[in-house]
Amino acid sequence: MLVSEILRIKGNTLFTIGPESQAMDAVRVMAQHDIGSLVVMDHGRLAGMLTFREVLDALAKHGGSLGSLKVGDLQARDPLTVPPGFDVMDLRRTMLERHARYVPVMEGATLLGVVSFHDVAKAIYEEQAFENRMLKSYIKDWPEEEEGRV
Image (spheres, rainbow, N blue to C red):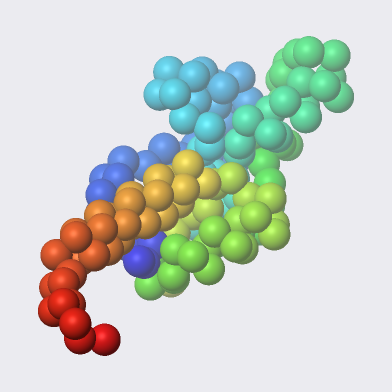
């Protein structure tokens, strides 16, 4: 299975924000849409990722307040990205190794979407469930051997 298949199923809704936006505005967008990340875009180019991890880190460092912090102050720079043709099993391994919960999918300089670890886990689960059903069906329909023949 390829990353492009996850995006096709998931849809192409993208949530982005600029690095000069207020951090609190980013938190509002994330809460309003029940999402854990925003892609930070600067003049049409990927500048980084803002996830709940960076927000919580900033809150811890600033006594529970984001104050006048900007998205660019918090964002993770140079995030892991993958092309749409990337294999989902390889992505799972890479996400685990890099502790990445959200990965932008890029085709050249074009942002196609974001894949979360939840999306990857769901896709793998559904693929394996389908394979299990097919195997069980195949085994159930296995022709029985004739008696006396070995």
